[in-house]
Image (tube, rainbow, N blue to C red; front, side):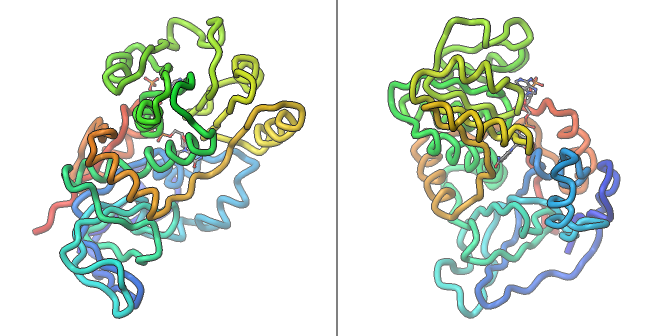
Length: 325
Ligand SMILES: NC(=O)c1ccc[n+]([C@@H]2O[C@H](COP(=O)([O-])OP(=O)(O)OC[C@H]3O[C@@H](n4cnc5c(N)ncnc54)[C@H](OP(=O)(O)O)[C@@H]3O)[C@@H](O)[C@H]2O)c1
């Protein structure tokens, strides 16, 4: 089968399309014929090993000391179950599924094995494989953080970085939970963020959100660009600061700040679960969450797709379509 191999850490050119053996499912695994995957910001970071110096050692131990441990990159798949291991109970051949895993999925390939105990679920039935693949990375993360912030109807919520994969999902999910949503993005993305349901949009190229006299119940920074001090000042009593992008020093600052404040401060990894994927499937089928796709590339153009994601300006998600002979 065709698969993309990451030969070493580095620029997109380290990714090579090769012929490799088709994997066989173990007892608790399903074999998925992959029709779509994505290039997430996480994939780009893992490929380039662009991590803060203080995360270097733990990240190398997880991802691979001298080169990527996981030869086939990618975290998300959408496809059809081709066969199942002898012990699999939740899935059968023919099921249309999607899956998301931070480290164990070999997604950039024609076929991938996934344990039925991983974040694997039936895909939303009303969208294509490409659209289904655009859901997990951003929406699992957004759902995790908004729940950690105990989002409730009527709250005022600021989504900083409203145009990325996490941000476009966060705007829609916050509206789904009944919040009054302000999105922060650049001029080019104002129309998109409004169309996703934001009640108002702040263009960060023209105005600092912290200069406004507005206060919020939740500030969710999806791109790691807000100041903790500004955000705490703008949060209402009992409010929540949610930070998707952390560093050891920011985590220490957040820990110290939470000791002297009534506010909830959350900076952590959002691990995917099958329950989250099933919840998101229901929301997509109910029309409450729409996949946002910026560009779609064939698997053969994986290097181009990574180059585009490396620019850091994608709107929502970059999807890879996997064609089968
Ligand atoms: N904690 C977790 O579990 C978790 C999970 C997933 C992702 N993450 C992290 O979350 C971050 C975002 O991920 P993502 O996939 O959503 O990223 P992404 O899609 O690559 O984000 C790109 C978007 O951010 C916008 N942006 C860039 N600079 C900005 C700024 N200063 N202010 C506002 N918007 C800005 C870009 O538009 P413009 O350039 O036009 O503004 C673009 O639309 C990444 O660092 C990722 O590693 C964390």
